[in-house]
Image 1 (cartoon, rainbow, N blue to C red):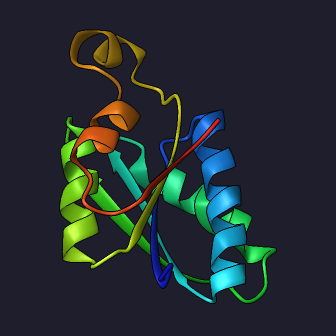
Image 2: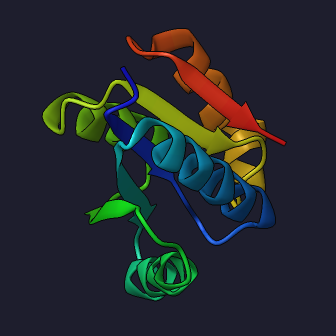
Length: 122
């Protein structure tokens, strides 16, 4: 358990806290982080920031995934299945506040639809 940990980052403060939490889980479980961002424009920048955060950490194996799209929750669930992850980690609030008001938050959708344990970090 906790061998493939998917953490979704979008550049928000909440997502960076989720990444830090997931790093701790990866160290404790000796698992691999799958760091995912779902963006339409600046995804490479976010993955670059993620990589910089992990550069200072020892003993963490990580893979970086960029998915393009406007429906983050469905992409996260798609990657979770494709990458055979056993845990999801996400922040409580992302950058898509208008989208959240119209369609519900990403973390709420993940709570309802994920087939694996979900950790939501404040």
